Length: 160
Image (cartoon, rainbow, N blue to C red; front, side, top):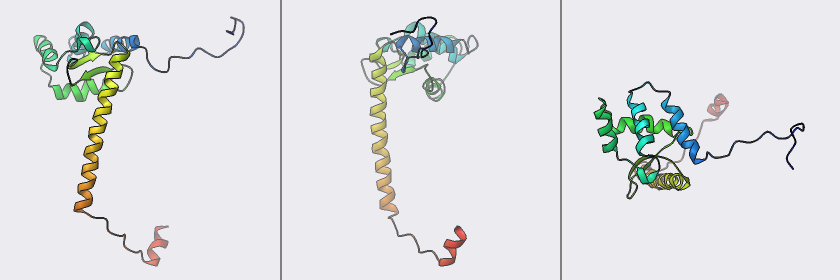
């Protein structure tokens, strides 16, 4: 039973996860944080205009062409370690996909877009886990575990 206007009740709760429109709205709000004509603003405006949803993903070459047409040269690495990385720290999320048919960058528009990103991260984490396991194996081969030296009786007391 819903409380009436005069009864107290729990405050309405925000959704636990953003709805797709919130991803788009978060990007729109972020656009306003950048000065007109700056590379980050141009990228966000471009993605909002041409790359909403995975089906509209744009390659870095397409984004780069747009930036160059507006007088800016930004490397893919600078984009990835800058705006793309920052976009994934809040509700503004620039999606990316490294395989066809949705290769490129896009603004998440629906659940399937978000699931595609989750799948991307699962693959990446699995790959990184394989790399760290291999590194640890190599460390173990190069520097095998040796028993810790015994401490002198006085050393244990000093350490405390």
